[in-house]
Image (cartoon, rainbow, N blue to C red; front, side, top):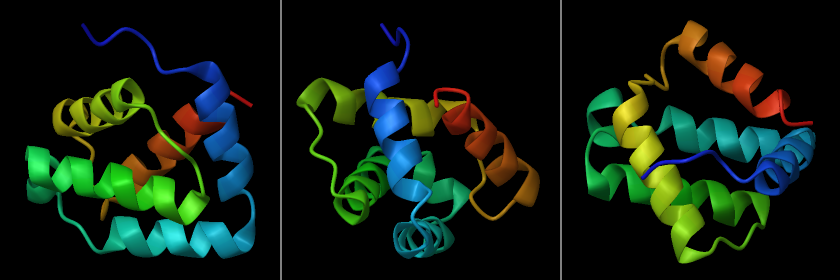
Length: 95
């Protein structure tokens, strides 16, 4: 069901987040949620929606669902520096 993320979308997010203004907004979104929230549909969809909004990216329903499901199952803790580094590494691998 999961498949792989859309490479074009991942490159788009990477380019947007490289902008310092956008990066600060992304950091604030990630800093405002907890691991426990990301494990729930409400929390995961909220984060996906907030990240898309602050990066100015329009998501399809499928992309939104994929992102939320990924966040709920990947076990990332947004307050753990190693986890943030791994997520940045994943995103930058699509550049």
